[in-house]
Image (tube, rainbow, N blue to C red; front, side, top):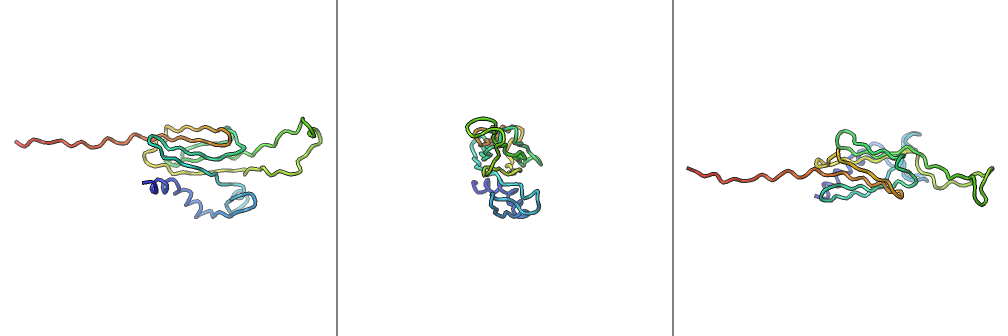
Length: 159
């Protein structure tokens, strides 16, 4: 059952990798295929299958909750994306900082565009999804529909 759930969650990613192969670059994994594709990156995620819900943990360092969009497409595909850039720290005060200061090294850049898709199983309740972003980790909870009642057997008396 666990391998089936894993397969359901990764189908969109597998198709994306087939269509847009991943190639490593100096700043992380980016898809090939033009300037727009070079700027997008993969969001690392952990997915938990709990008795009453599915829980997704995604690393989104340097992004605030207003920078992230969580949507459902095609009735069963959870899409998490961001097109925000990480903001540079203000340099208008403090020791050695002030007017005329400029960055000589920027290593903490984040990709301009992040996106991840997950195909949700049939028992996922897409109208009951919540998300919380805290300390660079996005937590998305997708509630499950209750399991259907088991069919009951009845003894029929023969007359």
